[in-house]
Amino acid sequence: MSDTPRLELIGITKAYPGVVANNNVSLKVMPGEIHALLGENGAGKSTLVKFIYGVQKADSGRMLWEGDEVRLANPNAARKLGVGMVFQHFSLFDAMTVEENISLGISPELTRGDLSARIREISAQYGLPLDPDRYVHTLSVGERQRIEVVRCLLQDPTLLIMDEPTSVLTPQEVEELFKTLRRLSEEGVSILYISHKLEEIKALCHTATIMRMGEVVAECTPQNETARSMAEMMMGENLVSPERTDRQTDGAVRLEIRNLTAVSTHQHGTDLKDVNLQVRAGEVLGVAGIAGNGQRELMEMLTGEVLAGKADAIAIDGTPIGRLDPVQRRGIGLGLVPEERLGHGAVPDMSLWENGFLSAATRMELLSNGFIQVGASTEFAEDVVDRFRVKTPGVTHAANSLSG
Image (cartoon, rainbow, N blue to C red; front, side, top):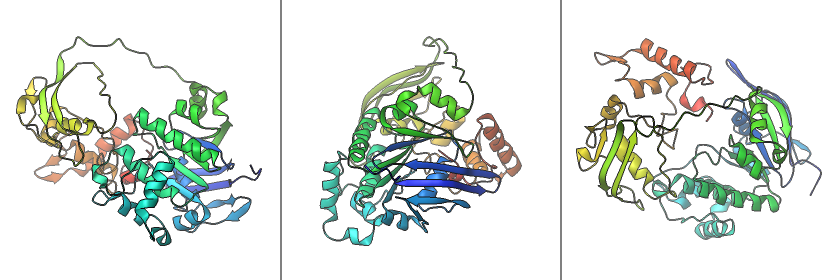
């Protein structure tokens, strides 16, 4: 392969009010290379790849493409150059089919002819099974990601950017994705791969650039490192292993599901049939299964998005909650971290304090006589930011401004 880097960044700097996202960042990606971009949340990775994809402009620095300097005005210019990107948060319309979604995200000339046949061809060629006629709202998260990947591959990219691609995938889906990426690499496609999962980086990537606080702090060959050594490069300090507590399996029953049976509300969904389980105080219970085997339906029943047929089918601390709505369940102490963080877990365009208010209005008494207590809501959000070390300039910033 050529000795000329497919992509080279030289001294890229990008600042926002209150934060320098990228500070004098340089890196090279070679043809056919799977190149990891590592760093903690807020290290500047997503900002950097948005610059490469033409979404944002740098304040200073240069970008070379196969040795020639380029300036990308927008993502369309990046795609014409040969850059494809699968974002951490998908850009899909639930009420449209796979084919309709793909047609919206590609150049008009690529939609001519039998697009459905080309989707099936690419899907088969790279092991990414997709039905062009399926509606997106019926698909698992892994299947939705395939749409984004196939949409990129239809445009024959020579650099594919993957932003946290395995964060919501099952182990089986991860392995299938890796097979696709390795095949693309063998065909000469460069891949810039963002992830926090260091064992995956060791298994997949040829090289790694490590960022911290907006700067490149190290480069390495992942196969020559341990997950621990790469984590210490990311954090800039020695890791202290957390102490494992003894498993608690003899505590009081906190959550109990009894003979839960329900018909899925989703097309191509999976019905629940006589589900029984208990979770005791201090216990961590895992629910395993290939995507599409009832996990979504079970979570909807637990959170109250779909009500159970009988109140006593689900109980918390012995209190039947099967017919309670989500707000009532939150009042009892039930919390949820959904697989879709934006859209389901948060309202992207609302501020952090407004999102905090939506989740904690009742529990934290953030309403008074029907009026939002802005001061108390802001203090609550600031406390969450401090306790969980959320990297943000402030709680007035929108949820979609945060890293993953």
